[in-house]
Image 1 (cartoon, rainbow, N blue to C red):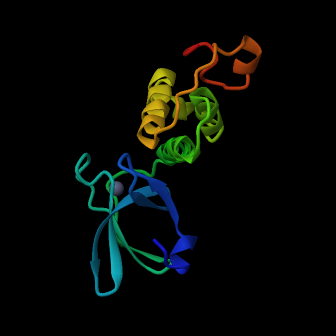
Image 2: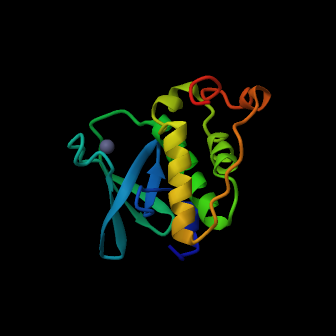
Length: 159
Ligand SMILES: [Zn+2]
């Protein structure tokens, strides 16, 4: 994704780290290239049998097939949060807890918390990424109640 005009598009990361296109509340995975166009299909292609597709030329997005479901803004927020956590974990050694807390600041709606992995899963994820990067795992004692109050949704559930 080095094309300058393409940088105006919005992407989130897949679980495996691939760029997925965000457009009008939907998320698309790259399917193929054809005649200078990139064809993207809805990430619910298999799960919901959705035929939603767009193609892009540079920063221009054109819808070519409609979805069979509503857009899901929560999913985009959650993906952004998880992407941020992974990128930060790769960036350099830090406490997993700080990285997760930083990431979940992107989650501004309570409805998103149902879609997030548990706190423990997020910490495990960060530590796995850090291990792959060869970073030393840094651990500190649990957070105080006051600090937790800054993290709605996680305040009583995961600490
Ligand atoms: Zn769809």
